[in-house]
Length: 392
Image (cartoon, rainbow, N blue to C red; front, side, top):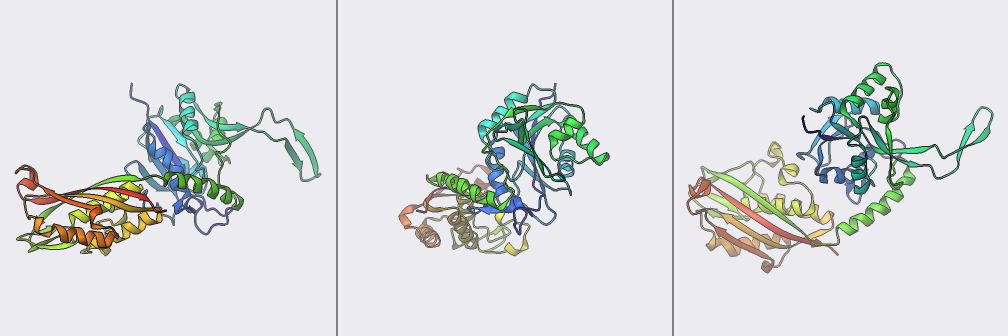
């Protein structure tokens, strides 16, 4: 029997009209991050969620930190939520018994405990269910025609939350049915109910609210700002690696310093392996993806650009996230050229770009004892380890 997989679908195609935003709701920023990024953290960190499908508006692309992520695929959503989710399901290579978790893009307060509890409560279920909370306040029904108010017993009423988790085959067939019959449903559970199934309610946390109205933003900002400050209150480390092949030329750019040599570098930019590895290490420490996400080699704007430009941009990005570089350990891996004569100049150049004391930067070189492409003198590589600290 095939292993059952868990997939996540994040409908993010909503316009955000009720929020009063001039950008799609999931792209509204708090502390420099979109709601979508805040929401996705838990799903991307999970070791049991196979893949995440995000449905986007036609005029929106993913935030840079999510582009090219190996666990994410973005597709354009539909006019209604059910159409968006169905399009996402159709894009998955899933078995009918696999699980699909559908979660609102504007619910950034889902807890790991609730996510894990949902999985444990449902994974042996044949249909699925959803997170929900029992109503705590008195419920009133208002007849606008007669202006009469009626108190409704609240003990049987629950407020639906997300994620909603269903077997792939059941959910896909249910959504197909409501779309083909033009029925209006407001969530996945309702579609499954109309198909004749009874989803299981799993009690969740009432803090798992959906950001919908302007008043919700103040609450979200206070909570996410606190979370941001907590996550930015300790140092972080990052590691980067880069490699380039030798080609025709008469020198190399290494660590921002031109070094005469009998060969050149094959690269889209200037091919500075030390600065490229350093950029990746800094981005990794700050959780901002990699150099290819921010400066893709397919973009001709970066053709032949000096890698100093990339490093300066990366430093601005980590500064926006509340960090500054503190320590750098850099290693050049090559048989030739020898960098000892240029070591101090490279350190000085990097210290000026990063506004660090040269003593905060260590640069060393090693060979591979004739092994591999470096040993055959076919190319050059570099590795970087960095420490970044809160900018208090």
